[in-house]
Length: 180
Image 1 (spheres, rainbow, N blue to C red):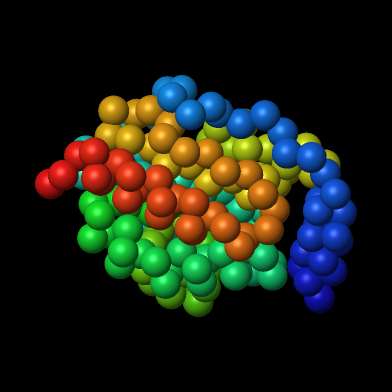
Image 2 (image 1 turned 180 degrees about the vertical axis):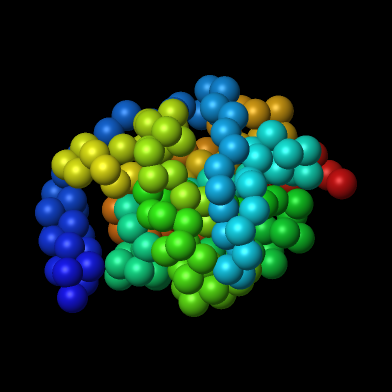
């Protein structure tokens, strides 16, 4: 119940807050390694290793199991096969513990893509994705990162509605310029 109330409070208070500064298109993407979960199985996610396979869709979300984050996870799960067909990897990042993300990766991510734990907010801060009204949480920010470690796309909006579409458009554009 506390988590539901906190999620509702978070959703209600942040909708009126302007987005903070994020990394710009063309900027270098900070490298990171984080403990992650895919289908409840933990592993070490390395951005550098993922970029060797193609672009990475890196999205930050405030908290697992809240309404907007669940919607966004379902949307990314539905699109994961399309991203994979284009050579892209999807990874979500939040401040949640790995134990929470083990459950979230199965139920809400539907075991389709990994989610990484960033409880000390190092990755969130490196990507300027801090939710200013509640600094322990990340803003809802999506990036597409090219294999050369540059930011191809950035989109910040607390509504989960357009994140998958914006990321998909950027990956498709990149793929068109870099045929397999």
